[in-house]
Image (cartoon, rainbow, N blue to C red; front, top):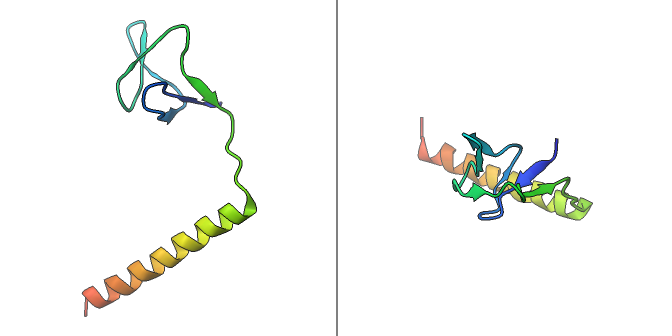
Amino acid sequence: MPKKICDNCGFQQYEFLKIGSKSYCNNCSALMNNNSSGKTLDSITVSAFEAQSTYDLLYDSLEWLELYVERANPN
């Protein structure tokens, strides 16, 4: 099932919040028109370089966090 994108805030969601017969964004509570129920997002393509860079950044950040926690708690 493709994700829908709110026209107002860009929040990605599978379904809009339905109250009565109207649809609302789950994030910003904007009223979605019946004609345009948000754009659909089929997939996001990420290059191997971007994926590896993101992984490296997350890994390095977690290593720094681990060092900080070890030094903050001297037990």
